[in-house]
Figure 1 (spheres, one colour):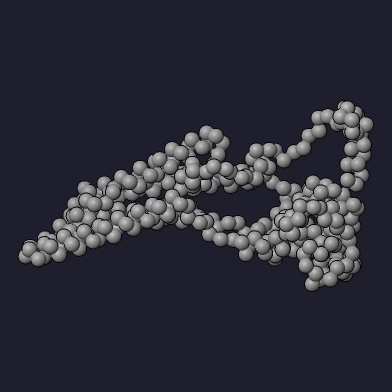
Figure 2 (figure 1 turned 45 degrees about the horizontal axis):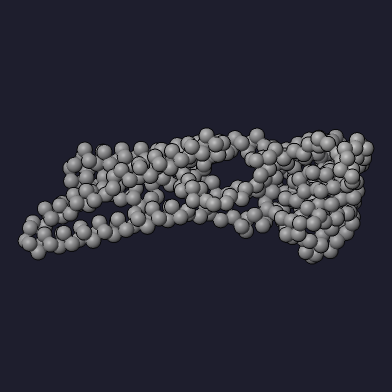
Length: 357
């Protein structure tokens, strides 16, 4: 599609759109963000603390204690459950807030035209029809079609798996062509290796190719091995407790004991068999591990991840922004003879200014 046709379809021009038009479009299309991972509100995070079979056993034991008029035991069990769940909630909620604050601090911007002026805005503010400018090192914020380009090479490893840069240039390409063959398009999630360009944004957020892939790959957070082990242990306790209660109740009935007394005795036994302090012990141990990790500048969002973290041999992590700063600094330049040479620095500066390498 030619630039004039693009401008007509997207109701834009080479100097971009107005601020008023941008506000209307962001209301229509939404912010240029991807759907996050399945996150929970504070309420859901709190109620998730009660999903463990062991915790459910303790709640059942507290109810049975009330039925047996043993209010003291019931209150003690409930306090233990609330303390354990409260500790877990406090740790995970605090970690989630800390991560949210860090993400707000790391804001990516893009150069674009608004009201005919070149501005620097957060990528979330981009809408279809915006005209953006790109240079070496820039992250492509949304799916776009090239208007102009000069020696433009882009890294599209996120889509094609190829580590080699792909040359891009303005022109027309068959709309049915695979992503790797669309040489006139720039895709969200890729970044500019060299050169410079201007492009018009066609789709944003979840409507981009990257957003579609992200939506397909979105899954719920899997259980850790530790959580599976605790769940199995909880179900085993429930099964053993139920079997023992049935056996003891049956024996008492066979011995011609009063049925009501036999039932109450079985309930009391069920309360006695529950491991009241186990959830607190688990939560305190995991919280201690999380605090130790916090001293090493590591935020633990899920307490159950501590056990997996401890059994880890090799950790593969995205280093930019965590281990490194995402900045490149030049201290010295050497020629082909391993001799420090200022001319190399000068030529590199000229090349960078012209965006030709």
